[in-house]
Each structure stands twice: as structure tokens, then as C-alpha cells.
Image (cartoon, rainbow, N blue to C red; front, side, top):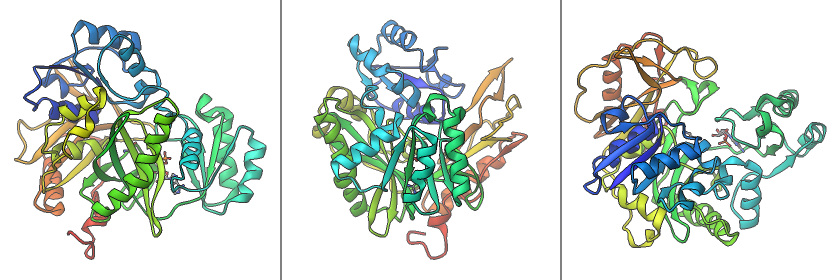
Length: 426
Ligand code: AMP
Ligand code: GLY
């Protein structure tokens, strides 16, 4: 089979790396890809949101399956366009993908299906939104409705801060994505990212990981796309996973199918583990980044049959995926200034090899005159497997110490919850 992977981040490199190990695959191509993905197959300079360009490329390559990474491509309707010309695609249609592209859509779906989530209200007028804060207590949760690359959520300690967030969102900081604002009750607990595959008719849990969204150690600093993650999480056992599938993922997927917009692909279920059980924080219409990196190094099963089944149907005929028993970690190496003003262009020197159990995925790199340079905020993903999470972390840290990347920084406390002296599974 020929497989085309759409995207250029660490998530896509990890997917390509895992897909390349499948005996079902004859060739891999990526668009636009990155220097790491270039070692697995040809790369093509087509943007993920260039729908016509991606469709033409898939047809020219006679792709048997297109695997879409980024949410922007889902929202742009790439899956719709590929389905239209008869190319199998692992990604939901734009209509089903509204679970990510509109927070108001997801909250309405959750309310309709009785899915446990924080209470909410939606506003299109700033003065009304500010008055609406009255119904909530601090800390206030203010969200821009649309896609904002993870920057559209403000947790405000005071009413003045919440009002400023409303003004900023509705004043155009996120363009059209901020024209509607969602206010939510604050949920307390540990966050977990659960992944559910769906072929439109049936669903299957497909792993989970705990991400670290703040930029700096101690969960301090600005929110980012994710600075690192680990799996398995001792806080999220099989019972909680089954509960989250039964009460959150399956009802949402059933609701989408009943609406005539069946969801095919992977549903990212962002959960808060509260004292009363898992609650929905958000859905995304794609795999997580960097969660995928840690899931791919732990996945024992061939991933390709699962991706194909989501596109073509028959997911219910596949066994649940098998995971390696080792712990996995992913530490993001980011460039100075990330997330606000990432400084790109610096040269990176990678050692010729890493110790066994270490995988390094490219997330924001480019080749310039034959040299590897930093081309994005989250630059490299250093992943490792270990008998324990501590061992995996130490391997990842040793690998980082062997990389020359002036101005690069990373969190040293990825996995702290599971590594704390009292945590189970330590
Ligand atoms: P979202 O883009 O909706 O996932 O929000 C980004 C981050 O904001 C989440 O990962 C949480 O850390 C936090 N967050 C969002 N909604 C809530 C909520 N209702 N209560 C507490 N934290 C939240
Ligand atoms: N790591 C968070 C996300 O992919 O949205």
C-alpha cells in the first residue's frame, strides 16, 4: 500500500515511523513532511490546508490511504474532498470535525447526549458575556469558540481578568474564531488525553497519555501545545477508560452519527479526572501532539489495519490494540521564546545514534544548505521507553544532553505526577 501522511510535526513523524514498520506498506510519502520524515519516504511541499493540492498529490501517488495530522486540514475539508474522489482517508469530515473547530458545537452536543462536562454559556456580544460571568464563580474559564492553536482559553482568577479575556477574544485577537465566546465552570483534577477510534458505526479506545501544557517546570508559564507527556498514567486505569468511553466518547459518536455526520478517524477526548468521575474538557478531531509520539513508541500492534478500518469500516472486527508494557515518555525540545515569539534559524547537531529505546522525532526543523536548523517553536521530540518511567525519563535526558541546540529548552519534570514519591506505579 502507498500511504500519504499530511502534516509536518512530531505527531506526523511518529505516525510515519510507526506506519513504515507495517508489512502492509510499500511506500510512504508526506506533505509537507519534515527532514525526519524525509528519511522514511519522499516529501512534497504542499500545505495541509491546500485541499486541491493534497487531493492532486494523493491521486498522483495512487495513495491507498491518506492519514491527516493537523486540525486545520480537517477544518478545511480535506477528508470531504478526498472522499469525493474516492481516496480512503483517516480523518473526519469538516462537519464531524466541528467537535474541535467549535467549542459551542461540542458543548451543545454534550448537553444533548448527557455527557458529563462543566456547565456553560455561549455569547456573541461582549457586554452580555461580561454580564454572564455573574452565573459563574472564580476561577473563570473564558474560551474563544473557534480554532486558535491552543491559545484561545483563559483561566482567569478575577472578574477583571475574565472581562479582559472577553474583550481580547471578541476584539479580534483570534479573528473570526473569537466572534463567539464560551464561558464554562472550572473543573478541578488531573487531565488525561484519551484517544477513541471510530469508523462511523463503532468505536474503540486507542490509548491515552498525560500531557504537560505549561511551558516551564512546575507547571508554570504560558500554555503551549504540549511540552511533553508520558504513558501509561497511574491515575487513569482500565476502569476509568471504560467509563470515559461509555459516558463520553460513545455517546458523542452516536450523536454525530444520528445527526447524519458520522465521525471517522480518531477522536481526542480531553478529560478532567474529577472526584465524581471523568468529565469532558474538550474534543479534538485528530491525534494529540505530543501524545501520539509516546503512543507510537508503545504501540505493539500494526497501526495500519486500524487506520484503514476507520476509513473503510470494519473496526469492530479488529482486536483491541496491544501496548508494550514499558513506560514511555516524550520530552519536547523547544526553541527560546516559544510559545509567544519562537526564535528560529539556529543550527542543530544531532548525534549519529542514540541509545536503544530512544526515538527522536522532528517537530519544527528544516534543512538549509545541508544543515539542520530550527524552523518551529516545538523543534524536536525526544522519546524513550524504559522499565520504569524514571528510567525512560533518564534515557530521554541523556539523549537531550547529546544534542547541540543553542537556545533550546525543555521541561525537566515531565511525568512528575507519576514520579512523585507517593505515586502508584513508580
Ligand atoms: P481546551 O482548549 O478547551 O482544552 O482548554 C485548554 C486547557 O485549558 C485545558 O487543557 C485545561 O487545562 C484548561 N481548561 C479548559 N477548560 C477548563 C475547565 N472547564 N476547567 C478547568 N480547566 C479547563
Ligand atoms: N497536546 C495537546 C493537543 O494535541 O491538543
